[in-house]
Amino acid sequence: MPITLETLDDSTCVSIDGELTIYTVAELAGALLPQMGGAARLMLDLSQVTEMDGAGLQLLAVIQREAENAGTALSVTGQSLAVTQALELCRKAAS
Image (cartoon, rainbow, N blue to C red):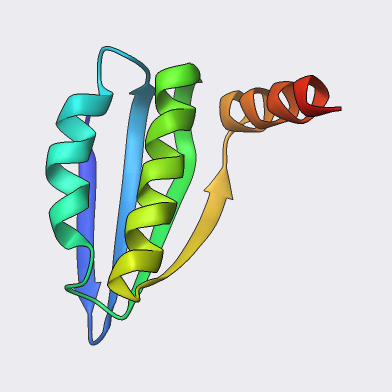
């Protein structure tokens, strides 16, 4: 899964291209979690995610928690159809 990291001043932009599934989250976590606290802002671009499962959702929750703990402002700058569908499924299950 290609991950692109771009840092400009106090912001880091992370773009994920491909699957965000049980098969790829360990690699992503290893690349992304060390970025927490290194920048005041972390922008997560999910516009190129092709598939997302429960492990991907869990990783997003961990990223959010770690960003809060590190004092890093987290924002999602894009959502693919796969991400939107996974989040909608969670909303329906919570209702």
